[in-house]
Length: 177
Image (cartoon, rainbow, N blue to C red; front, top):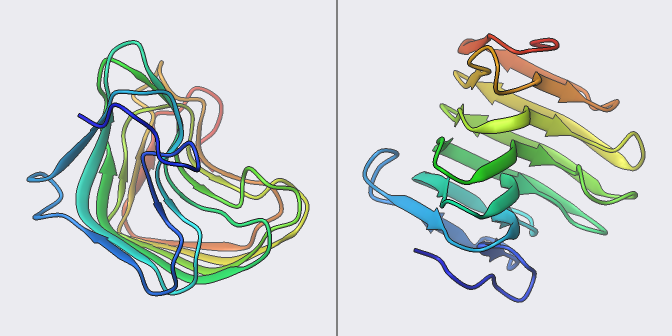
C-alpha cells in the first residue's frame, strides 16, 4: 500500500527523460493507493513508459487521475502499455488523463496500448483543458467501461486530436465519445 504521496502529490512521478515503471504483469502487479493523490502514476518527462501493472485506490482515499501525462512546459513520446485502473473501495475521478490539469501544456505523441479504464466516476480518458498544445494521442486495443451508473464519459476530449483503434468503449451515463 502506497501511504504517502511523493513530492508532486502523486503516487509515483516519472520526471526524468527515459524513466520507466514496469510491473510483472497487468494482473500480477497492483499499486494500492492509500493516500489522496493527484495522479496514481504520472509521466512528466519525454520518452517515459509505464507498463504491466494496475492501480487501485483504497477505501477513504481519492485519486483525481489513476494514470496520466502532464507537464507545465513540454513532454513528448509517453507510453502506457498493458496498464489498468481497477475499481477498489476508494474513488478514481478519471482513469487516464493527458494534459488535463495544466492550462498551457505541450504534450504530444502519447500512446496507450491494451490499457483499461474500469474505475472512474467522471471519464475513463480525459484529454486537454481546451488550452495549450495537447495532440496526437493514440489508444490501441484499450477498454473504457462505464458500467452503466458509475462513469459519465468514456473518452472526453477538450480539443485534443486522438485516434482510438480497436478495443471497447461502452456503458457510460452521458456519452461514450
